[in-house]
Picture 1: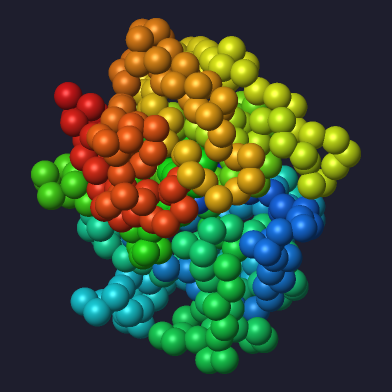
Picture 2: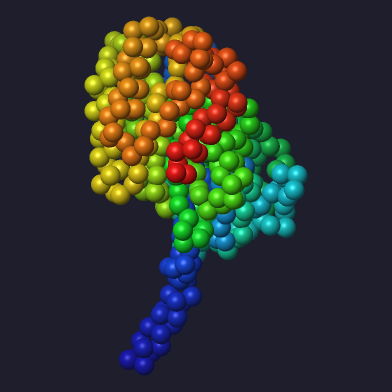
Length: 414
């Protein structure tokens, strides 16, 4: 009996040695978050033309995303963190893109979760895959494909967040999905991690739609964060990962399209693998919705003052400093001319200017990235430069996002 038990213990020990994650077995590497999409909330029905119900998806889902930092192993993070029920996943694969950007069928590889090909993502929780050896270059496009045997309702998102959906049987290994349609919604895939060099790091870009990339033309270039990643690649900085933690409609102080910044800061910024720096660009929605009628009712959104937002910023600064992470304050970009009634007014512009003065002069951030100066119109500084306007006087165009990225690069590479 003792001899049998001893043999079983040896077997278990040997298996444990075989299954040690590469992150532990190879201390010369470091895990960083090379792509990200922050889990958000369903937006309740609104009496506006832009509102649409959340999409229901079932079957094979295929996501296409661009990696920002190079690595030799990958892990995929799935999320049900803002979903009310568990999500069943029967299979997940990852694949590289070929030179034309299409899925390379020869590179398709299955992902496993604690050794299993299927998994259950618990409601309110994330699920991280086992590490998979895979060489990925900075700027490479990868495809992650899931099969969901049961329907899942995914929160609404900007049109940059799209998924191919093919109902029915598992097509996770197929080069092209048969009978697929395109849906818009927040990704179930919330992050791709890569094992990079031991000096690699992650910069988290944390904010609202202007960080998420609303107004950009290409889903592979989600606003200024992806523009920043492209500039870093041009400089040979292939081990700096950019994790885009923007959620369109997000606010600092209260929930809206996603949990408030104060609520999600640990999840989407401080706990990100390899994080050394956070760029905070948020508050324009707190200001824009201040005092407006709440269409979900009853009553109005609370009035927000500069002091309210500064108190929120100070909490985020304190939490970052307690973790030894640098936090860079970004000035709020112009919003006068926004077509949403009451969102941008001369009175609210006064508050924006007050906030920007505090961001620039308080000394409480580790550094300041002056996005306001980067995109404002020199002839009318309270408005966005026409060449940098995507069309709504609020969200930058690709050229505007490029100007923001160049400004951020000058600060973050000092």
